[in-house]
Amino acid sequence: MLNEPTVIALNVETHDVLAMGHQAWQMIGRTPGYIQAVRPLRQGAITDFEITQRMIRLLLQRAGLSRFQRPRVLLCVPSAITEVERRAVKEAARQAGAMDAQLVAQPMAAAIGAGLPIHEPLGNLIVDIGGGTSETAMISLGGIVALEAIRVGSFDIDASIQAFVRREYGMAIGERTAEEIKLAIGSAAPVADDVKAEVRGRDLMSGLPKTAILSPEEVREAIDENVRAIVESVIKCLGHAPPELAQDLIQQGIHLVGGGAMLRGFDQRLAEETELPVHLVEAPLECVVLGAGKCLEAFDSLKVLFMGAER
Image (tube, rainbow, N blue to C red; front, side, top):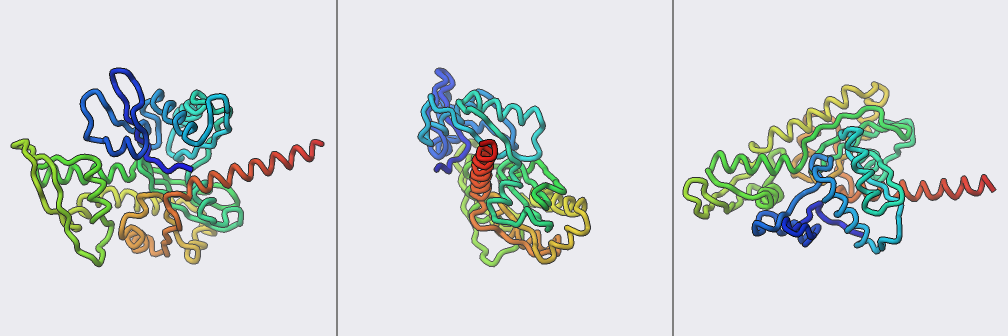
């Protein structure tokens, strides 16, 4: 129903919500002092409880639910977050108007949404690269057998590009500009097209507008540490997997999901490092929420079945 960035714009003087999602994302780095565009979720955890609660309430309203309707909510959360952070997410949903809030691990929801045979005695390796976390999970017989999660994701890649431009060119660029550079010429491995990108920002010495030309090689060097950390976490998860399941991956391969997995050349880099086939699933951005939808459908079917058994 909705596909919005987790950004909310607030008037810091009156605490009124001015925009959310795409509208608020357009405001990042462009607002006056009394307006603040913030991300209430960082690295999969809540950084501001009240703002997160208000954002969930707005999402429920946009989905067509009034304050008198109290829906059941299923939230997909990273496996890397702590038990305290899990309770905070559930409490924020309840405070926003949910009758009941349940959590499901993102790798499990992604595997369901990607249509993998997770209920069979077969090794399914899913790599979910989100904005704040990257998770690798080996799934078999409906459960997670081996898991490796790190708090490195797409936002960290954007921050590395910002730091590189500041260090090498003496120029400050915004969060949005860094993301646009990543999408335009960012890559994890050498790719065929060698197109350079023009970057505009503010000179740190003079404070005047400045322009620089970035090459794909420079961006690849800037983000290499983040990419290497994600690849190493995948290899570490493979090392924890039982041998019987690990051998299944020679045929099954590794499945990539999440926005970060769409970085050009990442599948090629991971295939070279692990010597296994790597597949980018269809709809990598949506497969987590599609899996959550299937979880809710299964829950409703079981509830009807149990009610029939009671009768």
